[in-house]
Length: 310
Image (cartoon, rainbow, N blue to C red; front, side):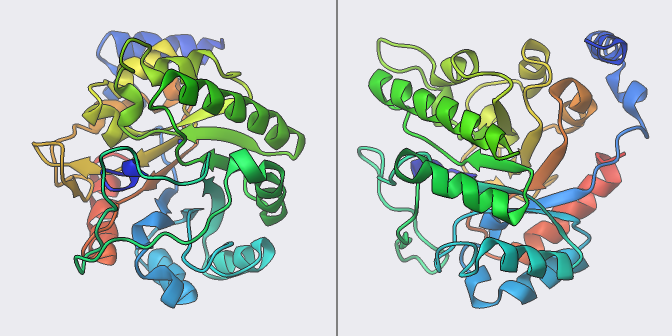
């Protein structure tokens, strides 16, 4: 999730793998050993999916994707459906529904920003959406009903120390509620969490240190972490096993334009080589507000299967 959307997530084997990465031999060590089903985050289709949910899912499967992570819908709920009905449609398309995104707090634009524009140049219209601050138990219960493995906070306020403290409290409470419901909870980042609060901390540092590492995992959006000045591999080494979910998108040289995976400037090979250190279980291709979502995901999966995935 997005330059647009951000304005709005010891075993012996581990020791050996860590040693391989530190020695620079991770790529050869892991070559052929990691093969994950490729997933896609449905926010990629925000502009179109509600017009034809079944058709969209069928085309995603036809492109070679095996897993999906759901997100916001203009129709509300799960693309206008109840969780079990949506799950049935996903499974009928030959896909596995692994994760669902929700908001951490009521949506509001950051100070000084404008509503992102759609491909037609018009401002995005945001439908009313439930959020963890006001509707936590309902969102947890619905995700559990749908049978997903992960519930993910797509974003939460971190602009001020007070906002950050409130968000951390919400994340910890949701982590506990999700655990009781049989879900793993996680937080998805944009790049704003890496910007130090004036006179205060770097939000992501506290999101890591002040949330329960068992109850609150991280879904690392690789591109936004890079844009925020971070090296994902170093993050994995510092917090091994904390990142079971990834978002994979690319950025141009200015770090301003989102591109299909492999067509930008991010070097994904060392990141994927460190997948086991990170604890990665699933990764989801995402392209926020693309002009042609299907062209983007087709390009991305071809690059991933040829260069990164096993």
